[in-house]
Length: 219
Ligand code: CDP
Image 1 (cartoon, helix red, strand yellow):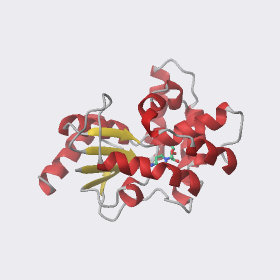
Image 2 (tube, helix red, strand yellow; image 1 turned 180 degrees about the horizontal axis):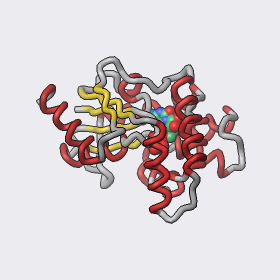
Image 3 (cartoon, helix red, strand yellow; image 1 turned 90 degrees about the horizontal axis):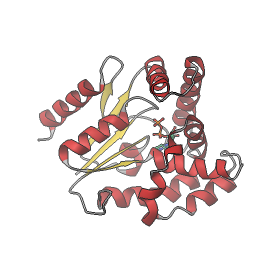
Image 4 (cartoon, helix red, strand yellow; image 1 turned 30 degrees about the vertical axis):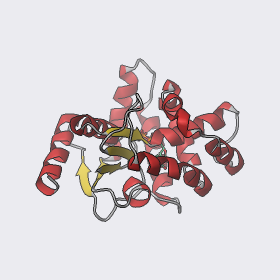
């Protein structure tokens, strides 16, 4: 069983994906972290994430066996890393280098301790359209850019980080544009995805709505 969750930045995909994974006892993969890890590796070399040479080299170095430890790096959550991720994610060869790893996980999901799971929840931008077009359940989670910027702003504030709402909103809009307009695997809902607008839903309500849709249509 594969649950694919796509959507723009800060729409609530990650929280929903983790809640569903916990509920069904499935393994979870935040595929954005793979792109973040590549963007981070390029930034660490003081290079430009839009430069295909460095981005492709870093993506190809990714060792699937070390996936858990690489993706745990707390610096991957930084805003600068997210912006770098969306720049490397435009490059088709970077996407190709990360594709098998994501499909392998979906087909043979495993938990952090290495034990195998009977299902997988993947969240990202192209899971329902490209990585797992055959996923049994697909969600496209969205919310207005202003609501999403506000959520990110609160998250950063709560973590004690100084942030400007206007700058976050601008970054989100730029990232939405880059993610939606790239030629390789652009951000868009799969035809058979349930659209979940979380602008007026908190995390619990979004989870409940997703569970209702699953039980009405799939159980
Ligand atoms: O957490 P947030 O929604 O801010 O972003 P993320 O899911 O960590 O993804 C960071 C960036 O990686 C996105 O802006 C996308 O450009 C890229 N990405 C992608 O292209 N395909 C995916 N399956 C996941 C992420």
